Length: 372
Image 1 (cartoon, one colour):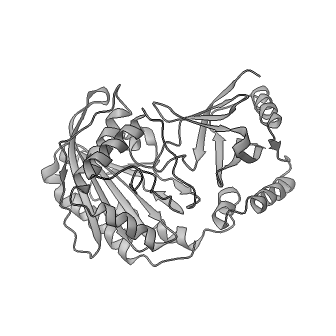
Image 2 (cartoon, rainbow, N blue to C red):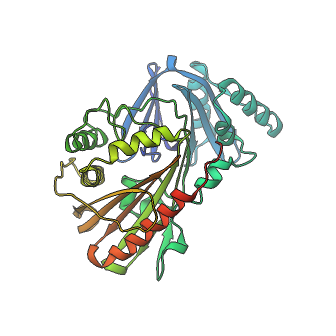
Image 3 (cartoon, rainbow, N blue to C red):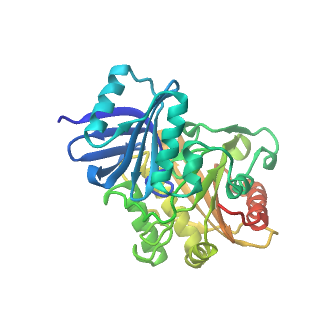
């Protein structure tokens, strides 16, 4: 058959840690299911033989594709209008490769979703993904970790639209909740992609191999839940944008292993440099290999693990002449949290950044462990 392309989707969860979830285009052919995610697009191709529990769900609010790949349940939701003809074509191709369309009645659809979740057997959080009856305690606790409007004073605005900030190239979609299967092996981006090049730069800077790297490499782990804050912005300090995301891991040993790597003396600057590589590489024609980062001392009175780095970034294509990117990592118990700051004048903003880092660390270290 000829390839069928369908644009205008979002995917949950992302195919790689902190990877793009929108915009997404889907390509279907005889070989398999290909997803093009982000801008510039990163391609993930999955053979049909590796896809199970393939379903198409039609609702009044739109159309959704559900599939299990490598023991992870993914959900693609159409966010652009689609005609009945387009949906019928999509259903036909999926059906040719074992996909089934769920019943349309409300009662039967609920039953079909329940059967799908039982067949997948992936734990309670996938039930919440498709038909949430209640919010797990661990997720409820995690949602209280991120920075909020109460942490910023003065004339700050907030937005959950990823297009409002360059931070969307390195952070999770603002206000998003991501559910993942922690046993899933990390997805390796294409060798010449921005994500892959940034990972290589980070590993070279930190002195680790891709096999043992827990930040970008093969040893990295998925959290059970990841929740991101809105983007908060202000005209203070020449212009400032901040966003955080928090993660819950089923095992504190995994967090401890992450902390062991991130405790290396050069981590702060290497982390800032690799994120700047990502930010610039996804908006420009080439991915740089920046080496001008520095460790950043975030002054917090809360007792907990914290590391930070900063680097100057220039991205004229989006109007950034010379901003400072600050990346802060914090961890305790089952939790990891990350704060990103993009600011024009760093020196006068230090007190504000310290306050935000301290507020985040207080919640990370005081949030009780909950069952997922």
